[in-house]
Length: 101
Image (tube, rainbow, N blue to C red):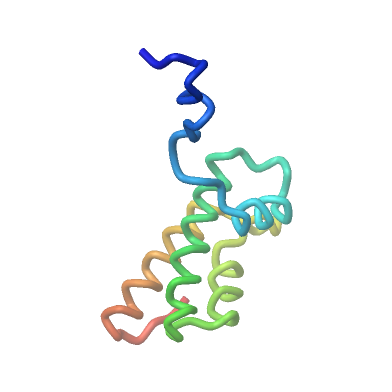
């Protein structure tokens, strides 16, 4: 057991990964009614696209097309569908297959 007077407890850091500033900024721009789980699904889709974008395999137009394809008739975004479409897009880019969004 640590002795608090020795300073060990004060030197301990919080467990887990440090918070992402980019993720926090993006969260502020998304609808506030989204649950944490919905945002995590969106974040996963966004990261998949961003990784391709960094490698020069995807463009902002591709992201816009993915979002447009995942929109519901009332204009809201189906985040699960966006994640699914983004995953397919990633696979077609990796395999080098012609893609249609």
